[in-house]
Amino acid sequence: MLDKRRIIVIIGTLLVVVMIVVAFSSVFLPPSQPKSNVTPTPGAQVQATVTPPAITYDKEKRAKAAALLAHKEPLPLPEQALKEALSKETNPLHTSSYVFISYVPKQDAFQAEIHTMKINTAKDETIAWFRSKGFSEESICNLPVIFSINRQNAEKLRAFDIVFSPLAPGC
Image 1 (tube, helix red, strand yellow):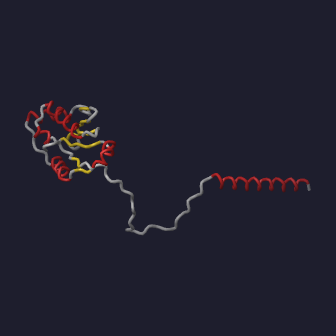
Image 2 (cartoon, helix red, strand yellow; image 1 turned 45 degrees about the vertical axis):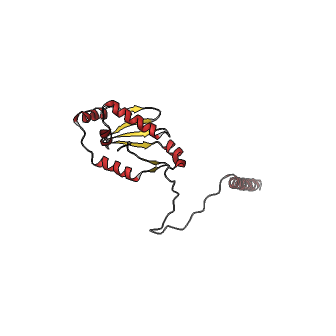
Image 3 (cartoon, rainbow, N blue to C red; image 1 turned 120 degrees about the vertical axis):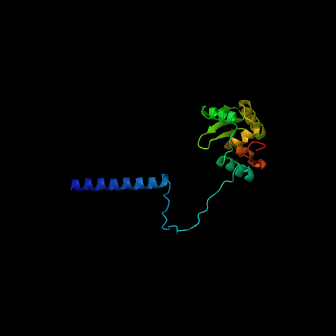
């Protein structure tokens, strides 16, 4: 009889412990998300939040940049040799607080990433750097040199309604 009593006490104690654990777990654990039985229908439209671009690119200049990348004009022989020499150097080719200049082999073009809100200063520095290497203004356009702005500065420029050209001035 004593053994039956101990078994009942042990079972009762276990049940109380289980109920306490369940009660505390429902209080301290976040509620589970209900599962939905709804399946999307094919062709259903999903709305997504789209962040507007930080800056607006000049459509005509962007199209011209794409055309320059697709159909490169031949460079004069001395400048072609300069381009080939630069393309073999380690990136970045030039860095400053305004711009990072790199050669992009896949596009066979030069990338000038602007790291300042002073766009014209960065572009002027880039052109001066290429001129110091021996390139003419026309060849700078035909290399081509494509400009972009890093995300941080593009975000800062959002409020100014900048229309940005990816090309050097005069191209």
